[in-house]
Length: 248
Image (cartoon, rainbow, N blue to C red; front, top):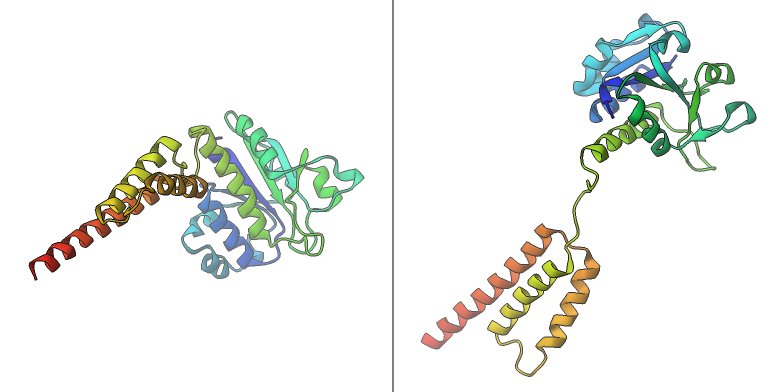
């Protein structure tokens, strides 16, 4: 996924602040090419910058066009976003499905993701200017998304796809395997033994207990180390206090 080849197109957005928030959503995901169908003078630049925070330069470099077709002329894919289904709207892809298609295309060309006006979304004629459709599933009771939220969701899926390509095993954290859990269990029970916890045979049962609990908890390495340090410190303090009592 070449994020520099992702183009975000806003078709006649109503609210200047939504443009600013959309810029911030783009910046969160390393996307910077903003195109707007409409006239620059129709928008309050100050309001845009307030909501954009530090992403204001994205708007400052944005280009303005008269139509979706004109705004996406240099793109190989023009994907219109819509929450409404219908015969004229064709097959709609989910964001993650579209991200997989976009990943391959962005290596050699630009692709555009088009968002409609906040009140009406993309009309059928506007969608006709796109060559495929993308939909974000949402509640049947309240399906309309804020423009910047929709931009954030689609941009995130593009960004997430790029992370996946750089590291196929990428995830927030990697749960410990059973070998590492057994090491943690040994550290915990060794320290329990040091403070005299096992007055009667029962260490094996305790090891089984901790192994079961820790494996279900899907611990990260940092969490396991914190647990180990806690029990080690507890045992050290207990032994220190015991020696102090003996001297007294």
